[in-house]
Image 1 (cartoon, rainbow, N blue to C red):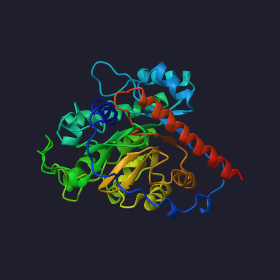
Image 2 (cartoon, one colour):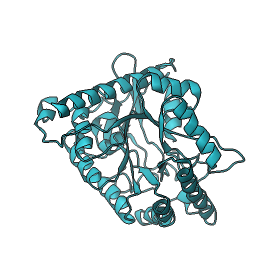
Image 3 (cartoon, rainbow, N blue to C red):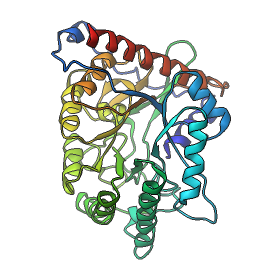
Length: 379
């Protein structure tokens, strides 16, 4: 499931909320280490309030600017069935953003989304289907070159076969609805996808084949390429025959080490990484430090969950298990200066306009945390 389609799908199916098992227990906040006790690098907070929600048009960009967003990730229009945007198309997108005083920091390509392989119109790279995958990789290489010409410094992408996996929906506070993953309710015996059985070795071959051909181009043109982790991790024996190698912290460490480059890193979804930790309320900060200290965090999906690996539900940013203020200070401390953006905001059954309200709430929450951090760091 594509992450954009995921939000739409929640809205379409929210009339019936699954009678899920009780949500995972919330972490004991009394055990959290006070943020003020963390030794930190002083200095100006360079983090930016960002967003990746669409569409990329005047109305939506005005909405983003209205609520304090300063930097964006967006998708450019393409024509003629091309998988890459031309320089002119990219410049049009950049000018539209700048019209609303937004900085276009990341481009979302027209393929390599977080979609399920059976619904993906351009699956060749993840199916290892040559010569089509070489054609699609060439399109990605062209997109890198065009982004360099248009002054867009980063491209985000996914290496997905199963998309976003969830087992149900749960009600949160008020009438808000969030999605849930409970591995005990998953169905690993579901029919195989058109990808068939994909072992760890086969998945790594497909990833390596891609990186071998795009990282040198990224290096040449100084464009970052940011990959999203698998959401969520699945049992070691796989799910629907697929081993999700980017669904563990060790897998992500291997990924960023495959082809060492300052331009090869992660679209670091804090929610997804938390989903792949047994105790994210305790462990996420060390993970941020490991990847951040190596310069491998290119963007942050700044969201929260209740629970951990194997059983979690999504959450409002202020009610999840992870201390987001401490996380923000940790990003600062490792020198990360990119975007913090909301992701997977709640929906309300029968009220599609609530998604924009949820985004606005998340912007305000992140902006408040950033202002509090500014005061703390300048004290």
